[in-house]
Image 1 (tube, rainbow, N blue to C red):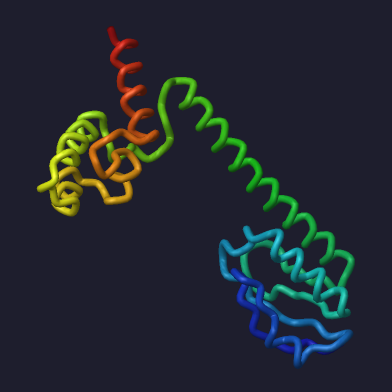
Image 2: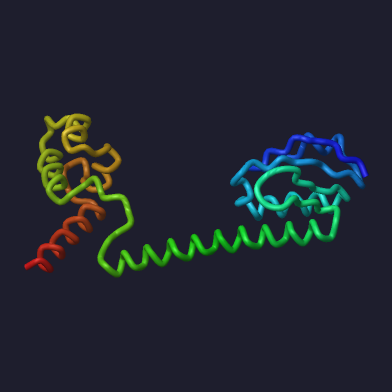
Length: 178
């Protein structure tokens, strides 16, 4: 069994340079930078691709135990590490979604605040109804883009569906506060 070093960028798992030099029975050596083991699925796919061509995968340095997929113990350790990384990722996703749901239940929105307000909409409607209005200047004054303006207000100052939703939401908020 030959151990020949080959470049393998852990973040993207590109092993094209290794293809020309590695053959069946060989094993490539990889140095894993700290914190790079979180890309579990891509790493598993790469190792399976290498294993299908009878090429081993050996991690020389990095955090944790050494991994050598040419041995049964190395395969076991690799599988355990990948399973733990995927479990950790799933926990993060689950906790994030639970936190977002709890915030929604408290009435908080985890989204970007809208640029267009009901007051800006009314000003835009009045200004768009006048032919001497410069759209660029109006958008700059309101702090919105042309796309946002035309999504809410038509060229003649009439309301579009998004503008109607905004005004309806503003009326609901004022009626709930009263």
